[in-house]
Image (tube, helix red, strand yellow):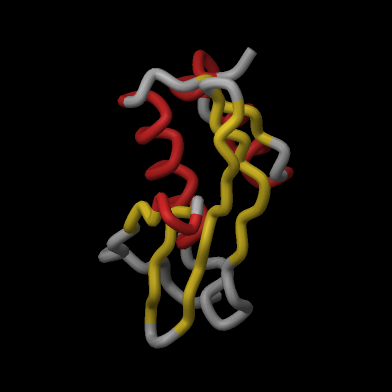
Length: 96
């Protein structure tokens, strides 16, 4: 398994409703929708070249931290985000 990527800069792109990062020319995203004061996290995608290296976790943490700062409830329709929240109690207060 390749090593985790320690230096990942995740950017919020509100015009595209996503959090994103590009590593070695490969773009990874967490897509969301805004709905009634909530952030519905719909999809997380990491190219196969970067999988298993912690990129998805960094995208999800950035999105959840943003939701916390903005005082938004999170609706995790993406299975990865849902599982991540269930495994990390510090984010469970963001969901109903």
